[in-house]
Length: 144
Image (cartoon, rainbow, N blue to C red; front, side):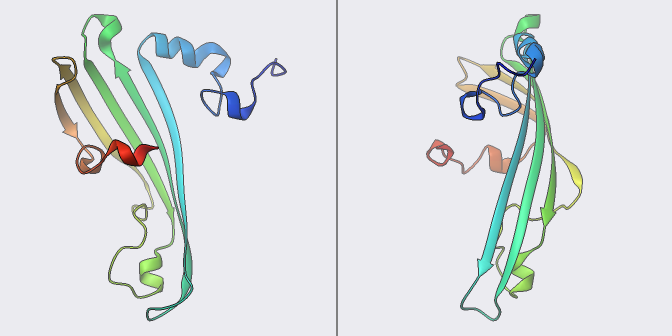
């Protein structure tokens, strides 16, 4: 059954469409995303000490768009993350945080909110547990 799969580089999602189930969910307004980010950090010279560290962040999120149910612009979103690794800032005795993804080495709720888009997405209301870094001081320039 897996002989006709597109190559990893030609797929819309790395894990494929789950035998059509992912597309069925998307048609119903439900999207599921998995992410993984890693930093390999090394201080090879300078400062008080030298050191190497790895940090990783695995995330899963679900968005439910209620447009299919007749409520245009209304969404329920949640995301969880699990971070792993070591803190290079502690290893090299640095005052400032070296890795932006280090911390909370447990599975934790990152965001859980309701969102309502109005006036062609020019006015957006969000209520719930928000990650301010996802909404403020971020630019589309950094997404490419």
